[in-house]
Structures are given as C-alpha cells and as structure tokens.
Image (cartoon, rainbow, N blue to C red; front, side):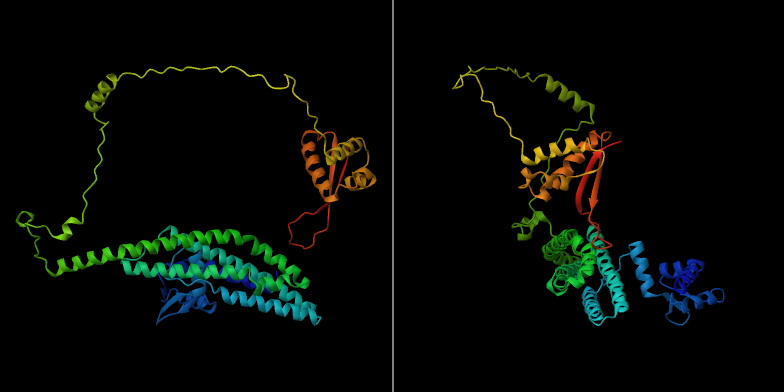
Length: 410
C-alpha cells in the first residue's frame, strides 16, 4: 500500500472512531468540548474535520458539511451552486499546458496534464448533474420552506437565476471556446474522446431536464405575481382587524344600497348527485329504471351487388426480382455453409466480378444482419466470426467490424 493510500485509510479510521462526534456536529450545528471529548476534538481539528467556532464550540468543516448535505439531500436556503465558469477556464488552461508540453517534448508533464484533464472533465460533468438534480428536487418539493409571499417570490427568483446560469453553462459546453479548440487539432483527439464521453453524450438529457426545471420555476413566478395583489389586500384587511378588534360589520338589512365589494363574489356553484349509500335512494332509482322502456335495436345488413372487373377475372402475375445483394448473400451462404475453413465475406465478394457495383460497406452491413438472423435458427449448422478493427482509444466503446467469416460447424 502506497503512502498516500495509507494516509487515506488512517483518515477514514479516524472518522470511524469518532463517528458519533462527527454526526452530532453535523446534526446539531456544532459540538462543545469538555473533559471527556477534548482529546478527540483536538484530533479532528488537526485533521481539518472540525473548525473552531467560539470559545469551546466547534463546527464541522464546510467542505465535509457540503458532502453530507449531498449525501442526505439536505436543502439549504439560498444555497450557492458550483462555479462552472472557473471549471471551464481550468479546462482551457489544462489544454494549453498539454499542447505546450507536447511541443517542448516534456512527455511526463504531458501525461500528467492529460490525467488532470480527465479528472477535471469528470468533476465538471458530475457537478452539472448534481446541480440539475438538486434543482429538480427543489422544484418538485415546491421549495415551500418560507412563511411569507415576499420570501417565496425572492426565493423563486433566486432559483430561477441559478437555472439560467446552468443554461449558460450548457451553451458554453458546446461552444467554440472549448469544443472548437478540441476539434481543431488532431493532437487533442484523445482529450476530445474523454470530453465526448463525459459531457457531449449527456448534453441532450441535461437540456431536457433544464427546460423542465425552468418551465416550472417560471410558472410559479407567474402565479405568485397574480396572487400578490389579492394577498396584499388580505394583509391590509388583517392589519385593520388587528388594530380595531371591536369592529363589527354593518347589518346587511340596514343597507339600502350594497357596497361595490359585495358584488365581487359570484357565489358557489353547487353540483347535486344521488346518494347511492342510502337504501331508499337505491330502491327509488331501481323503480325509476324499471319504468324506462328498453330501446329496440335492429341490425339491417344491406348487401350491394357485385361488379365485374374489366379485363376478365384473371389477375396479372407480378414476379418479384431479387436484389443484387440478396443474390450475392444467397450464393455466399451456399459456399460458406459447406466450407471447412472460415470464408471471408469481403474476399468472396472481390472474386465475384458481377457484384463489383455493390459497395463493400453495404454488402458487409447486409451480411451481418442476415447472418445474425440465420444464426438464431441455424446455430447448429454454421459458425460465425466477426473481425474487428483495433480500438482507436482505450476508453472508446465503438466496435468497428471490418470483415465477416462463416463456415460449416464441425
């Protein structure tokens, strides 16, 4: 075990040994030192787990506290998201150092910058995903942790601003500043593959999630702007009632002309329905149903006379011509199913000059599909071998088929 790994294990063992103290510091917002836990607190303070607050009180370090918030999905009011602009700037700096190290022949430094770039891209993708997940949780819970309408409106605007910043970040992820630099040089092809796997392949899903979140936040903000005038009037009336607790509304019978505010209420729209839980109601409905005459349903089928088809009763016969690729595959399978050695599909086609007009890619694609369908029903008669091209990059997931071989199973 390396020295760095041993240090990590020792740090984790320290957290495990003081797990109750760490949990209390996170749950209660801090811990107080006394004669029993003073030694443990000093150890945690030296390892940057606890930070001194005031006098004998200690709090959990902000970085560890944020990690616990992510694990337990604890939502903080007006929590600040990740600084994506700095992360993108870091990627551009690493690309520049990678190119400089290559031009100057510093191969070890070039490998170090490539490893740092890989970690930075992974961190950026993880932070974008976490930010969208947090905003989705907040919008689905309607972030209803405030008590006044004004607070609700300010909180909505804050989260909408965070969503707009994420939208700007998604636009920068495929902009010319970073992606154009990666695509503009063959030297950066390995780094482009890492970026495509971690970021570009996830962009469509991120955009869809971002659009859903933004639509919900804008809808809530629109509703709050509609509710706010009515809420202001209700607050004014509540304030009037608190100032004049002995207020009594006027008697409606003594008013000759009703005030304007009394006509604002349109009344309740009531809908009636039968109470089927009552036996009397069910019996009355049954008697009513018995008195209804049943409808007479008659089905009349009218058959229309037939008509003669011009030209007699004989229908023309159409002969379906097989396509060249189908004829080629049929002949290839006749030879391959009887061959003892693997028969290459590409080499066989090159020997058949009548199929020179058939492209190799189209021929290979059709043969792959057709052999795959035949192998499911004839797995006991033929054997199949797909010949693949070597991987362009160690992390690529693409399989490039260059040829196909079929022969008789022994």
